[in-house]
Amino acid sequence: MSAKTDKWVTLGRVSGVFGIKGWLKIRSYTEPQSNVLTFRAWTLRQKDADRAVDLEEGLSRTGGIVAKLRGVDDPDSARSVVGADIVVLREQLPQLGVGEFYWADLEGCEVRTAAGVVLGNVDHVLATGANDVLVLRAEPEVLIPFIVGPVVKHVDLVARVIVVDWSPDY
Image (tube, rainbow, N blue to C red):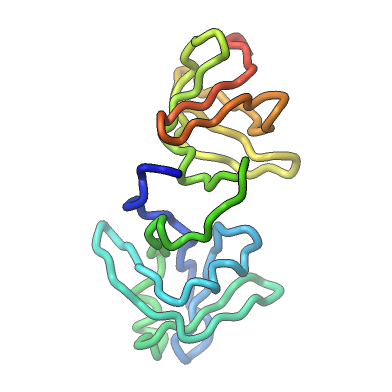
């Protein structure tokens, strides 16, 4: 599907310490948020240094996600990983159905109109209440709703191109 099988995908971030036994507060970027807990082996990335860790236990609570990592057993060791990104290799993600895409696969794709006018490259994807939005690196920044059919006409992950029905003047 994508030539980017060695790409790291960020699933969330360690946002704080929870309790006195080394539990961590997790800000999940997965949908639903509890999906971050389906991955038992995480890599924590801090300042370009990676550390492989195993998820011992995780809970979805009203206030968010909390997790216990093997070897992180007290508040001091928990504080040492606060701010770390939780990453996995793209190949560890489940296969998607036709017409479904991981945001990480869309990042960096060139976006152009059906007439071939290049609008920019996808910097990131933004979740909104109504639909996801492609945020393009361009001057000025371009926002395009990711609505397959009416707006997004074609996504080619191999060529790294997204064709849209969108005016450069919007």
